Amino acid sequence: MNPFPNAAPASAEPPSPPRRPTARFMLSHPAHLLALGFGAGLSPVAPGTAGTLWAWLAYVVMASWLTEMQIGWLIGTATLVGWWASTVTAKNMGVADPGSIVWDEVVAFWLILWLTMPMGLWGQLAAFVLFRFFDAVKFGPMAWADRTFKGFGWRGGFGIMVDDLAAAFCTLLVIAGWRFW
Image 1: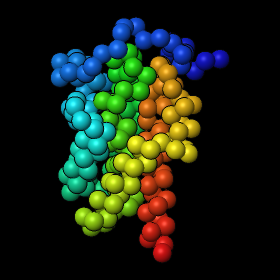
Image 2 (image 1 turned 135 degrees about the horizontal axis):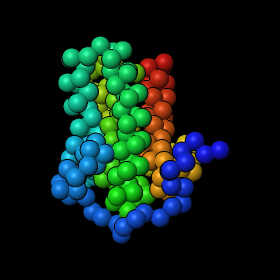
Image 3 (image 1 turned 120 degrees about the horizontal axis):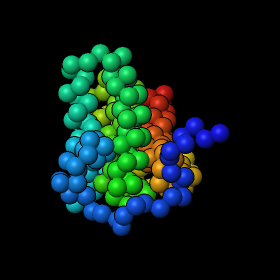
């Protein structure tokens, strides 16, 4: 029995031709606003990097207001809500995994910072560079996740989120190895 009876199958076609996101598109639905990282995904150059930079700044601000446990709950909630927002936004854009959806980078980088802090600026910069590398290159676990969950519907939204979580995992492994040595 299908746990998501109204969800479209992963191979379902989008309802409209592909769209390039605009500020108007972003503001037309709360899912778009979140998935596009409150505008970071509208960057004409390297939207994933812009989204990760936004995540870094947002984390620094959050860390001054929230406890570690509250940040953990926020990351968990942001992951689930991001799955929904990514699913809706990809469908409405007509693209299975649009580069302008950056909420996956935001959540993944928050997770990295949450698990590695406190770190100085150079450590945070190293985490940023490592994460961007693993997210861009997409080999191993990132390639598997990207390939396995491509499409529209709930499965495609999950795929948008999970390949960046795999990149976060690889980043955390490198940081753990660096700290061990």
